[in-house]
Image (cartoon, rainbow, N blue to C red; front, top):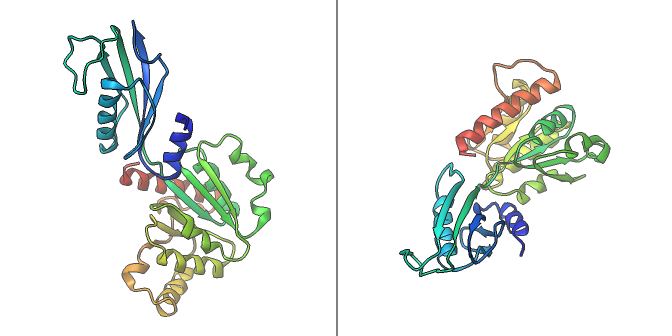
Length: 270
């Protein structure tokens, strides 16, 4: 597996890792500058030359995986028989610098309903390093032409789901910790999604767009028909966004919701 594929695999499995690169080489060394190794929690892919260099780099990478807010760092190795090494002697005669770059698990967000507000929110979130799921029952909301404005230069990995009948099925496919935002065009669809989200284990925050009157009806329905207790229902945040921002234009609401999400990511350590 190439290092690029290994990094993609870690991201897809939402596992942290470290990308290890031979940064500089002076004299003789097992690998040239640019050689790469990807270290995951339990596996590795690629090689920076084996021996003490690789073993020490893997040990340090695993330490970084377990360190919150880990920063990139350089490690220097002298390759001669006079150096006391942790994992044996490498006497190639040169010197090597190795760069370790942490690969944290990025946030994940799922937007249900890509109408006016949903699209504006997706445009903002697509500019961030995260996994972004866009779901709608209406195919015309998810056309290439409509989403092109955010897909053309997206930083996020964008996953588009057109589910005509039961959009709540997407909830079961989301990775643990995914933040869910419910903002469809149909209050009945919103209600079904809210109920299903409360029944889906491992989700992050759950947000619901709407008025206090809408929430009063939903809360009653979730309690009487859904059988959810008050503590469970309180997992749903509504209204969503920063309360200090009161504008109702789609772009304004999107900025408010995105800012609130960014605060949530910071609390989560992303």
